Length: 167
Image 1: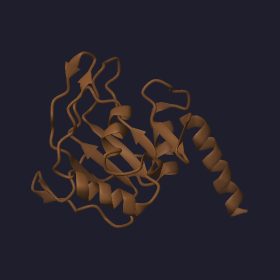
Image 2: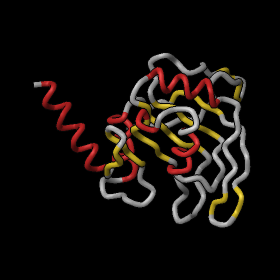
Image 3: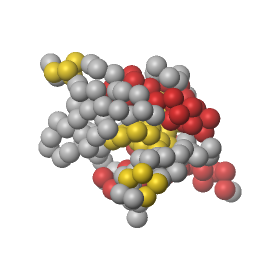
Image 4: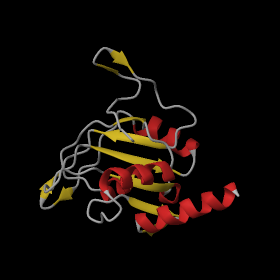
């Protein structure tokens, strides 16, 4: 069963100091998102720091039946150096101000930490196992070689590739 824990990298929270981003991590959790943000807003913010072709997964969990998110996002990068660079560079900065649904999104200080779930395939499997294989609304954005693909198609393709590598 996949679980995600909320934590803030390198900061003390609840008496526990969590580690700063590790060199091998490709999936980062971005916390303190404005409630109005969707995955495309996160991609737009990340594009200031890294080529969007290095991003292959963006998931912003949303409250069921509500417009608001849970104030965090999971982003997987194609390589750990890009993930580490973005984590170091964005840590402590502010989410960009933008108009969303006619309102100005609030500015919040960004907290970045490695996610408990690492890698594109593992994130897609976790999403499928938690939300179901037929979810469309609120599904993660998935990119393969910079091109957006439907998450179910990406998962099927990636799982078939990994089965072929094992034989």
